[in-house]
Length: 506
Image (cartoon, rainbow, N blue to C red; front, top):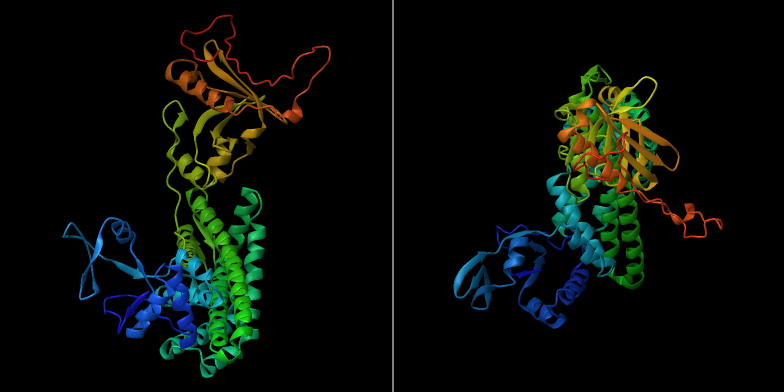
């Protein structure tokens, strides 16, 4: 909290706007208690100067405060920290807009929760509440009948926010323009929420179906996501304004406090769910667009007036995803290129394979190993074997490189037994027995000796480390009269009764 006659010109702070003086007083007292200043100290400070608003110290400043003290002159902090009588650090300030700030204020009661919403709203209004030109034309073309209403609600709520900030309160005149638009706000919000959730549901399918849906509906998905952002934030601004208008009614403060708590809680709950939905859609859309951009057959996608390069679709999806991340106070990250610690290949992993797998393997599962193997069929087929901390997958090389899909994947918890066997003059064999099937993979001749054999053996070890036999699958029989067998063993056997020196497993 900043107490001063006036805020310094170079200090970017969020003022206590849209609340009455009485509410501001109560908030100040609660914040003082929560921050350890004490109610009496806060009231004494207010007797000499006015609380100007909230600021946030930079992380490095907070760290320095553990070992340094603010320099003072005439009882005032100078904004410089000192240690042993020397300058140690200049205090750096930032607006209090982080998620932690909102969490602290929400714990102080409904009026403080309202302030948290205003802090967030003020930051968003300053930084990122403009239309995204990259996708705006798409929205306007596909939702021409809704565009005028969407734009009208956006401009109406933005104007009301500016007026409220200008006068420092949401009085009857400011709120009048919002009160008459409640039905339109909810109608547009429900419309675009249902469209976005429909896309999310359609994308909950296998890779090939997901890709086909995006190819057919890419433009509609972008337009609906943009429309939902406009509708959602118009509605959310209106809820903040309504809460501020309620808090201004001091004559009915007691009953209004309960109403305010309900309004703020419901607004936050509904808004969080809506933003999670659109974030999920855009994350999947951006991921799939980036995947398609790596495939040899994908160069363009159909849009309203013409086909566009797939890179244009990637740019649109990324722009919307970045906007949503900022609105949700989270970082928008892109997965780093894959660099598996174990690669079992004659030479090196083809770069296009790693680029495709970058967008195919789940973000939360790093690729631990990948191998060039063969499916043991009547007609052998080249394949890739991959291992993550949660699963292993097998896919024909042509399927992965041309279609960007993985044929089969299995949880590591399904592995029951693994056998790695060397063969004379040929590559080794890897058998993986799961709960449902027996999988046999072979390696080419280059994996039959030297480094190739060591690497192939290691991926067998990696899979063997996941072997388990749950208690529910263990069996006993009185004829044996012993403990149930766990089956946790792995053998590495050559065709002949001999072991290669230094071969590792036995």
